[in-house]
Length: 304
Image (cartoon, rainbow, N blue to C red; front, side, top):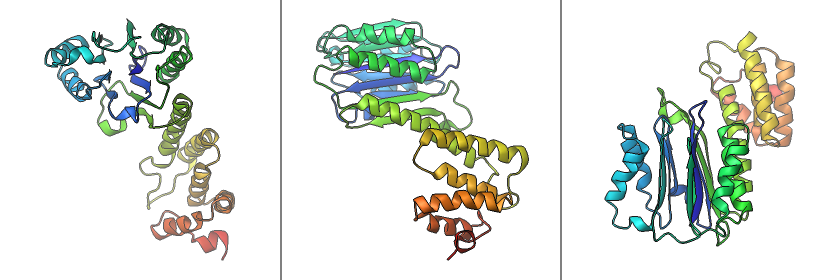
C-alpha cells in the first residue's frame, strides 16, 4: 500500500529508489539498491525477499526482466505483489498483481518505473512520471519531485507515515560500502516527504564534510595539511557548514586543520566559537590532543 519510483540517471549511471506509505519504517522492506547492479521497489503485501534476491540475480548477469520473471514464477502469492526492477544498463521490469488493492497503476519510460497501489486516486502514478520527466537537476532532485507530485495527487489512500530514498553509484568500485550516494529513511513522521528532503540535503552535506576531514593523510601524525590540500579542505568545510546550518562541527574542524597547519590564531577563534556554542566540545578538544590530532591542549587553546 505504497507508491514508489525506481530510476537511473542516463548521464551518471546512478541508480535510485524512493517510496512513501502509511506503513511504519517502509525503508526496511521496500527500497533496495546495489551500486553497479540495480534498484528494486517491492510493495503491496510486501515480500522483502524480492529486493536482495533480485539484486543477486542482476549481479550474476540477469536483466531486470529475467530476474523479476524468475522470482515471480516461484511466488505462490504473486498476485498480491507489486514490484519494480531496474538494472544497471537501464533495463526495467514491473509487475502489479491482480489482487493489489485499487487504485493501482504502473508506468515506465526509459530508465524509470513508477508504481503504486491503494492510492487515493488514479492520478497519482501519472503525476509522478510527469514530474520526473519535467524536473531538471540531479537524480535525487527528480525523484523527490516525483514523490511530491504523487503526494499532491492524493498519495496513499490511508495517509502518510514513512518514506525512504536510496541512491547508489554506477560502479561497484573497490570499496562497495562507500557507494551509497544517499541513504535516508523517515520511519514515522506527519510529513515524511518534507522530512525526507531535509535528510537528503543533510546527507549530501555530511558527505562533503566527511570528504573534507577524513581524506587519507589529512590527520596524520607526520605532517599537517598545507597549501592546496589545506585550501581545498577549508573550502569544502565552508560549503558543508552552509548546508548543515546550526551544527558547527564543520567550523570546528576548520579550526582544527588551521591549528595543525600552524595558523593558531585563526584556528583558535573557530574552535573557541564552537566550544562557546557547545561546551561539551572542550572535552573533545582534549581527546584530540591526547591522540595527537591537536598539538595544543584545551587549556592552551581555550584557557582554564
